Each structure stands twice: as C-alpha cells, then as structure tokens.
Length: 215
Image 1 (cartoon, helix red, strand yellow):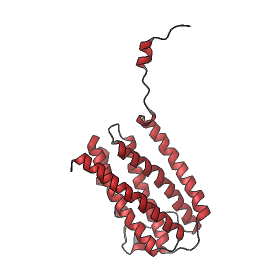
Image 2 (tube, rainbow, N blue to C red):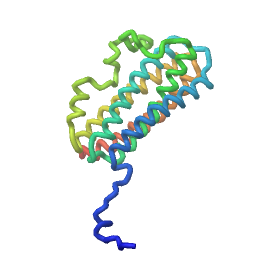
Image 3 (cartoon, rainbow, N blue to C red):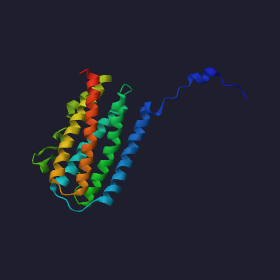
Image 4 (cartoon, one colour):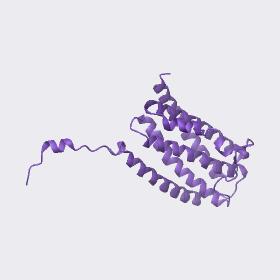
C-alpha cells in the first residue's frame, strides 16, 4: 500500500460545520419545516376553545411580526463570516424558536376557526391602535432592511442587534396586552413565554451592542 504524503494531509482543510454557510441554509430550511410541524402538533393538542378578539389579533399580527424576525436572523447567519459569535447564537435561537411559535399560532387559529393570517392590511386594531400591517411597532422599515443588507462586519452586527432589540420590545408590548385583555389560556402562556425569552435576549444584545459600539 502506498504511503500517504504528509503534505497532502496538511493541504486538506475541513471547516467546522458552523463555519460553512451552506449548513445554515440547510438548517434554516429544516427549522422551518420542523418548527411549523411541531407547532401544529402542540397547538392541536393544547388549544382551548375560549378566545376573544385580542387573542385572534395577537396570533395573526404576531405571526407577521415573527416572520420578519426570522428573515433578519436567517440573513445575519448566512450573510458572511464576520458575524459576532453571541449574536449568531441569538440569531439561531430566533430562527428555531420563532418558527416553532409561528406553527403553533397557525394551529391555534385553525382551532378557533379563524383566518390563519391577517389579510386585512391593518394591524393592531385589537389593541385600539390600528396601523398598516407593515408599519407595526418594532418592524424594520424597508430602508432599515436595505441598510442592514448592505452593512458589513461590525456594522452588520450593530444593525442586527439594534433592529432586533426594537423588534423584541414591540413584541413584548403586544404580549403584555394580550395577557391582560385576551381570554385564551394557551395564547396567554405563549405570550408569557415570549416575554421571558425576549426580555433575556434584549438584555444580552444590549451588552453586545455596548461592546461593539464602545459605549
């Protein structure tokens, strides 16, 4: 058997899986499928029939809210190799957890026999503050998304953290409202879980943002 040249082994470099952006694309697609599937299953088993306008409005509008957060997080994960390691962890958590929550929101809406998405073009009416759906508090504007997409290195990390902190704060306000004004136990439990998780992420991302900006 021929000897293997040492130099040949040295030349072969295998990147860790987390440094290969193609792996994140595959993981992201798998998360979309798995999250929605598990969300359907959990929602179907645990949905309780009592609900009101606030419960329905929260589920429909928060689905839209979550979908933008997932898009931003997935873009951050796959946009380059100069991302901040802690922000990458938060982005991964957002992709997986919020896709799972979207699946559960859809199944709860099905259990309520309500439309699975807000197709009226107006959001937040259930909170008494109607706005065009793409102008919900916390959503990044198209100009902000364009600037985020164009940013590189540290600037991209700062943009991601800044946008996601505002996104989470607005989501928490919506969750607080439905806990106080909704009727459905499953919706209230989901909202409280969101508050707990996103409050922790806000604190941690503020710490990273201070590090990146030197403030």
